[in-house]
Each structure stands twice: as structure tokens, then as C-alpha cells.
Length: 335
Image 1 (cartoon, rainbow, N blue to C red):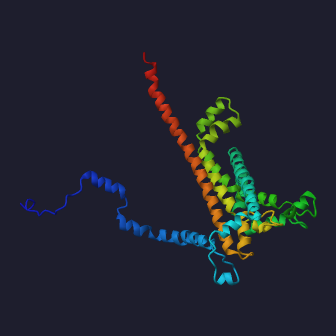
Image 2 (spheres, rainbow, N blue to C red):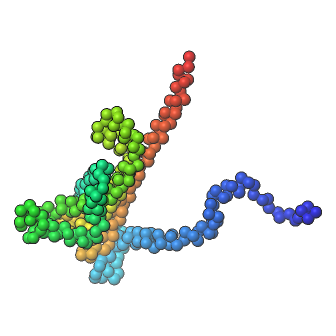
Image 3 (spheres, rainbow, N blue to C red):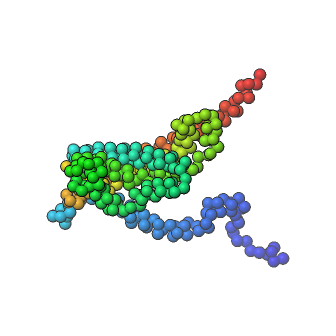
């Protein structure tokens, strides 16, 4: 009797399907308000340390803000004048050209290829020899940049440098005669460990059965690498290349070795921004160059992502084509 006399609530209880859909959309059960409160601290940190500096950099790039003088107290809005000045400056284009060479030779070719070669060679080495090689490679990566720079300056010193003692070339000023080559080799030495670790993990995931099948078929080492290994680690290669490219493009560590000299021969773009903004005192121009550098990074990242998506779509297209062929096969064969 009590159930029959229960008052109507005025709302229809959700059906079973609706409850399942809501639970799938809100697995944590926080609701919109709870989810907003939960992510608010992270959004605040992102806004404080990423969004605000980016907006401030854009603003500074449109002013004549300087480190000292009247322009430091009351900067004027100059619009796009800084960008026009930068794009018409031969020093900027020389710095960008040096940066591209630095990224290509030391990052993409040097670190990636050497890291892969070390990882490939370590597959067949076991015991203390493998541990020793991995430790030596990792040591260059974990050493602080200031310490690594001091070691390289001591190595390449003109008067009592270790390299001159080994080669018998006393008096050779490597950092002055070959400044770009010096920072390229330095960057390869510092960053090869990351590629080695990434490719070691990728090579461990290659199915041994595929390699064994290739060996039984008489494939050489190069053929195994080309036909079995590289197709399996293609995603890792793309990821490594993207990260190495961006890190090398933005690195400031070579400044500790050559300071961009002599005469700007090793002034990559990160060093060029520093020399313009701090020693040169032109904070507005430095901010404008930083924004150009950010745009170049975005273009590079989007290019890599587009290549990754294209390569990821190919297997799906191939699978669809194979499925279509499998479906069409019996029909064509049918009399």
C-alpha cells in the first residue's frame, strides 16, 4: 500500500542505457564542477609559466624596450619594426644558417646515427663490456653543462690542451680555428646518450622471430636492418628525430664553449638572442627574435607530426586494400 501511495517526483529516472553512457563519459564521477576544480591548479601553472611568458614576449617584441636608458623606463610601441629590422639583418640570417648546419650535423646526423650505432652494437655485447660502454655514454649526458664545457675547454686549450698533447699540435687553437666544428663535436658527445637509450628500447621490442626468419632466409646484416628492424622502429626514429631537432635548435650550451665567437662564426640562434638581449641591451629585439624562433619550432614540429600521421595512415590503407582484395578475390575467381 505504501508503494502505491508514493508521491510522484516529476522527473523520469534515467534509463539503463543513459546511466551507462553517463558513467562512460564521467568515469571518475567528479562532474563538471569537480573536474574543473581538479584541473584548476594545473591550468593555473600552465597559464603562469607558459601562456603569460609567451604573451609577454609578443608584447616586448613590439616595443623598443632596452636593458638600460630611457627606453627601459618608458618603452614605446613600435609595432612590427623589430621584425622588419631582424629580417633585414644579415647577422640574423647568418645565425639561422649556422643553426641549421648545427642541427643537421650534430643533432640529426651525429646524435641520432651514433646513438643508433651504439644501441645496435650493444645488442651483441654482454657483461662488463656492455655496462662500461653504457656508463661512458651516459656519463657525458648526466654531467652538468658547465662541467662538460670546462672539460672541453681544457681538452681544446691552445697552450696545455689534452688534444694538442695527444696529437703533438702544440699551439693549435681549436676553438678559434674551428669553432663551429668544435661545438658540433661537443654537442654530439653530450647528447648521444638519449638516442642510444631510445633506440636500445626500440630494438628490444623488435620481434626476435622476424629476425630469426630473416637469418634463416639468408638475409645479411644490412638486409635485416633495412627490411625488419627499421620498419618496426619507424615511429621511434621519428620521435627521436623530432626531439633531437627541437632540443638542438634551442640549446644554449655551446655558448659556454665559444660564446658565439670568434666574430660570430659559432653564433647559433639561441646565442644570438642572448647576445642581442643581454650584452646588447635590446630586449625588444631579442623578444622578437625569440618569437621567430618559436614559430620555426612550431613549423618543424607540425612537419614531423604530419609525416608521422602519413606514415601511420599507410598501414591502415594497406590493411583496407588487403581486406578489399581478400573480399574481391573469391568473387573474381568464381565462374
